[in-house]
Length: 199
Ligand code: IMP
Image (cartoon, rainbow, N blue to C red):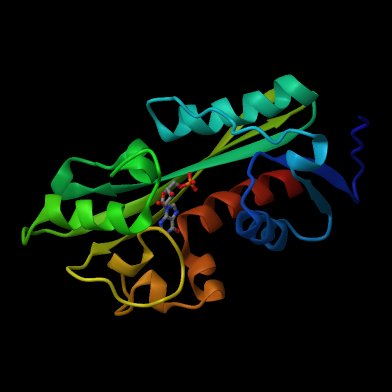
């Protein structure tokens, strides 16, 4: 597999199987970057993520691709930190209510753990690990907000129906994809990476 990098064009493997993430990252990075999926390189197994922090997990996923392919690549890992729960679910966000990563069960567990208590402040955080020419670079993005008491809205995914970004009166699930991406944790981390790559 040949990697090529010029001032006009750069290939990067994005360690995800999620087409929504690929689309968002491609939009943010723009035409000068060609994103390659692990699947297109024959990597179809689940990439392990057993770290105890978001950064460790993102690094583990990027390392997995780099060790297999030697190609420039990046990986992201995100989580929800709820102040009332001392930062939980954090690195456990996807599997909060069980290994099957069920979003409804996760939301139900979070609302149960929080009960009627306040404050409801929380944040989504994304850590990105980028490996370029064997060097490691890290980018973070945060979206501050608060957790509601009931689900609102049909859009988005995961915890979006109960998360209202700071300064908004609609949940993430009530914002359009474009509006959410403009303020999202992942959008911020990817834009920070894009700014670095374009330097
Ligand atoms: P991942 O690392 O991007 O797969 O995110 C881990 C988990 O965090 C997901 O399974 C979702 O439950 C949750 N999550 C991450 N980003 C978002 C978001 O933008 N909205 C709602 N939930 C999210």
